[in-house]
Length: 106
Image (cartoon, rainbow, N blue to C red; front, top):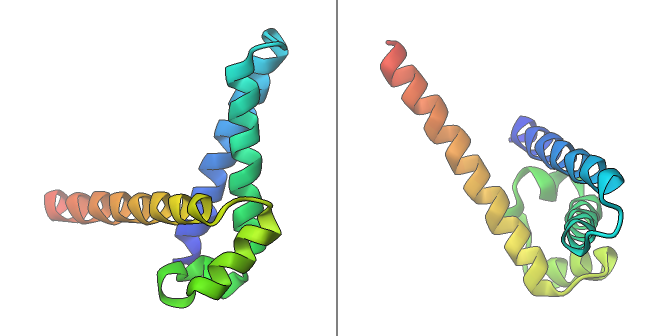
């Protein structure tokens, strides 16, 4: 699972870099500014988790830990939940793709 979190963070970083590059071309674009704010919140959430929480978030994060992560990132609890579900969806897609690749490759 650690590799999946690393890949998740890498893809988020690539997206943030793309938005920053676009913002250099159109510096007053409010949608791009909002996009960077969104990336900052997501990275704040991920950085507020312990290493164990990041590897297995749905097994370790209860209501009090969720509140602590939200406070550490400066976001609402719902935002943390949204990011966790996005991460779970990402993991499911990767696992499904790996399974399909093994199924068709064998």
